[in-house]
Image 1 (cartoon, one colour):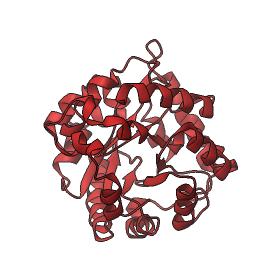
Image 2: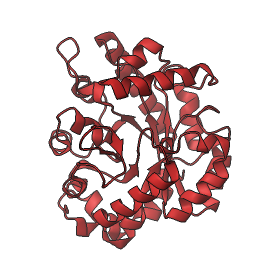
Image 3: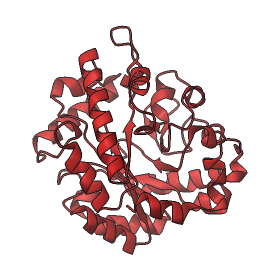
Image 4: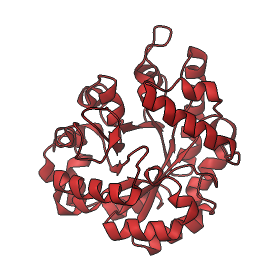
Length: 317
């Protein structure tokens, strides 16, 4: 990823006017350049980034993706590379590594399973728990926030994102708030913005509080931003536009994830029921600067991200 200063230099175009200034809400504010800046959350690719990272990235570049967000893998947070090495590889392929997901705190199997909302979620959580057994221990924000902030700076990242953290009890939620504020401070010193990626769980009631609201109310709005997974609040019966109204400018990152009309499980963007055009019209109010296609459990990752890219390109053009 590039530094935030380089991000501003690269992205200070009229194509971003509608994102920076809340008054500009129409899709026309994106312009053709923004349509070309579609991003991908590499978690969608499953094990491909572990077995053949360079070959997989070449295929992603050929599809047309320009912005990338990394995820944890069986080889650690950066697919077995030093952050600078991964950044150079991505840059050489004509793309920009702008954000990285890292764990918030160690999870046990019970905590993972509590995040499941249906049978499909449970099966996915169980598969993830099984994979965890074979994964090396990765750095996490609770124990290693300063080291992760340093690595984000080394890779030239604009954003460091907590992918998930236990929020099933008030004690866990308060711990999350503490971890986020510390991480935000460490990132700021390195000219990196910290953010938290939500799941559906954050919209449940926990001891009279909704984790989503509690976290936003008890973290510094400048140090802790949100990466809104658009499918998660939708699945929880929440309207993303209402969240933008409650917390304007707090959502610089989005996950553009669609849901199947019948199963309500992730599907290719444009093939589900989420009205992305409506959401993108309020990009300015949200403060969005980057958006990443994501599809959990993609069965044919390269084919699926190709379909999603082509569909989303039509929506944001």
